[in-house]
Image (cartoon, rainbow, N blue to C red):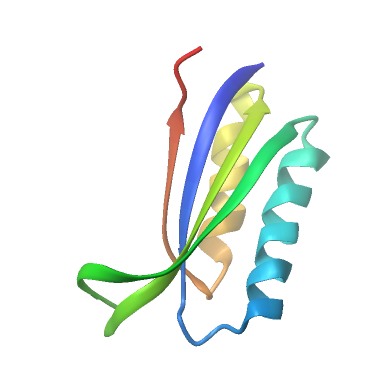
Length: 95
């Protein structure tokens, strides 16, 4: 398994409970594929450098996890399907 970091930018109109549900959904997606979520950090609401879907602010979440590389595309596909997630980025972390 490889170490990865995922940063998700969530619609600012989603309340705190909704953000928690999104985090749970992403974590479950990783767990279902045999991965392990090491850490989830809520960075809170931050200003965007440029408008994304007409929003100037968004909620940022950092998720560190371990997963087999062959499952990354499946996890990203589930994230892309979510209407509340404006942007995301998965990077392989240095060991």
